[in-house]
Length: 262
Ligand SMILES: C[S@@+](CC[C@H](N)C(=O)[O-])C[C@H]1O[C@@H](n2cnc3c(N)ncnc32)[C@H](O)[C@@H]1O
Image (cartoon, rainbow, N blue to C red; front, side, top):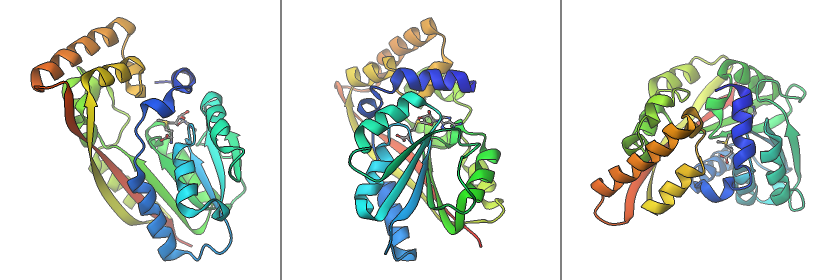
């Protein structure tokens, strides 16, 4: 997917994004625990949310730490996603909205105490983003990444029942690849690695509705008629596999906390 296609996708779903994507509180609580363990939080910390989208996780983190303790910078390449973020956050919190790419951050060296990247690292040029993260983080600053590995993606209800879903999604890292890349990073150390598993409930119709709304950018890797046909097969697969319309499944995600070495 080219950068233009990614921006087109997020422009199209910006207005419904908050409704169609699930928010996981657990990684935010993990961040809070780590920060409280390592920092005094006497004065507001500077947080950058890169690929912040509509600001769901920025907002959750601000609330978890207390609004008086956070000055947040929401960075996103999509103007439309940031506009939605502004409508939720601008009046309530100390927030700044930056329409920019993760690979070229418009900040001075050693600016941030914390960088978070939620559900977005697979959209970035990893090497160039890390170089920027290393540059704009203060010494001993934290980088928190929340993502799905290829293995976890294959285990989702989409990976199991939606034709072509996991084969088309090649942007996510395999678990060993992710750990290997992060372990080898110059000037960063891994301080926490957690695999979360979430029980979910949904009706088949709700899942079909999400697929039509293209709630994952993966659906943009399908041609229009291929996407419609795949939704039909997805629905048939679910009906065959589950006995009732209300279905139970799990989602898995990976959380990694890194700290910049002085
Ligand atoms: C799946 S959304 C995640 C949004 C938010 N972090 C969340 O979890 O709700 C990915 C976001 O990354 C942004 N994005 C994609 N490529 C980017 C890049 N190279 N630089 C900055 N943002 C980018 C998209 O515009 C989109 O808002």
